[in-house]
Structures are given as C-alpha cells and as structure tokens.
Length: 130
Ligand code: C2G
Image (cartoon, rainbow, N blue to C red; front, side, top):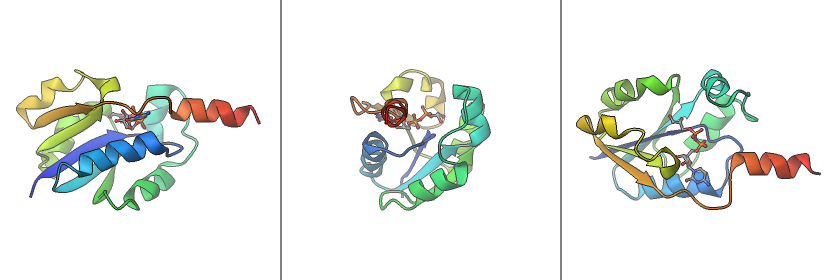
C-alpha cells in the first residue's frame, strides 16, 4: 500500500487545511501527517500557535482522510521522517514549491496549490477585530 506523508502546523484549522489533506488522501494509500510542534512553530513564526500541539494533533487525527499523526520537531528532519514511515510521496502546499525537491531521491515530491483567500493569520486578524 502507498504511504503519503505531509507536514504542517494546522493551527486554527480551516478549509485550506482540510482541502490539502483530502487531496493528499485521494492519492490513495495511507496518509500520515507530521504536526509541527509548538517549539518548531515558535522558531518558524516567532509565536506560539493558538491551539496547543496536542489539540492540533487531535483535530487532524480525527479526520476521515488521515490515518495517523506524529509530532514534527524539526524542519531538517524530513528525510528521517520519510524513511521512518517508508513514505512513497511527500505532499506540500505550493507556498513551499521547490523547497523539498532535494528529497526526491527518497520519494516522489508533489506540491498542491494553496486554497486562495484563507489563512490562519487572516482568521486571527478577523477575530482580533471583534
Ligand atoms: N494550506 C493550503 N491552503 C491554505 C493554507 C494552507 O493549502 N490557504 C496548506 C499549506 O500549504 C500546508 C498545509 O496547508 O501544506 C499546512 O499549512 P500550515 O499549517 O500553514 O503549515 P506550515 O506552518 O507552512 O508548516 O515542515 C513544513 C511545515 O511544517 C509546514
């Protein structure tokens, strides 16, 4: 069976997150999702996520299209995770286009278009305005 792997913070879970996971799931096989840890998010974005890593893992693990989740502790460990789960395909949104091409010696690397006009940052801005 084919194994698909993808990564993300999935904070303040929204339709863009759901669509990329559903599309990844439609590739067939099992879908494994690396959820960026709170500490990794702090490094990447300079702030703590709104939802804790355990809540973000719980939300994504509860989706019909997702088979299992794990904690992504470092952006540099993608090759290790791909090997650990024996992944055939790495899926990322096209905001990361080209960034993981160097892993194509390990597995197929595909980038899906982002869902337009929705992001965690824009939701936080809307909520702040209330
Ligand atoms: N996404 C999308 N459309 C949006 C917003 C996000 O398709 N409107 C996708 C992103 O491209 C990504 C996934 O949803 O593939 C998760 O998005 P984020 O939580 O923003 O992920 P990010 O913080 O970029 O973490 O190791 C890589 C990182 O962990 C990715």
